[in-house]
Figure (cartoon, rainbow, N blue to C red):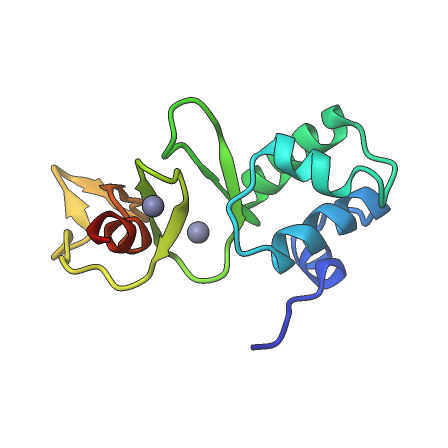
Length: 139
Ligand SMILES: [Zn+2]
Ligand SMILES: [Zn+2]
């Protein structure tokens, strides 16, 4: 898979390029985790001069532009991931890891209107115990 270029993404969304925005996007592209603003801060604040406020504001800007997903799967924290293909999320209550779910076992929407509302997107949060923790519990 071709790694997306942060500068191209910013240009496509008419967002002026700054080194901080590029650094944050680069990090979101290379991580497979769904980091919180705190995690992003502790991972990359040394590489670029980044304050927590800058990270927070940048994530907000990216969310509004549709570049990142803001996940509220965990009620105590907000997690972020870059929007590649639409997908849903699963949170393990044992290890707290968030997994991407691409193939839904159920198809919740058979048409795109509900009660006269036009549905543009849906995001489902699944909760339970992940396959890794299930394996550990068996031992
Ligand atoms: Zn787990
Ligand atoms: Zn995700």
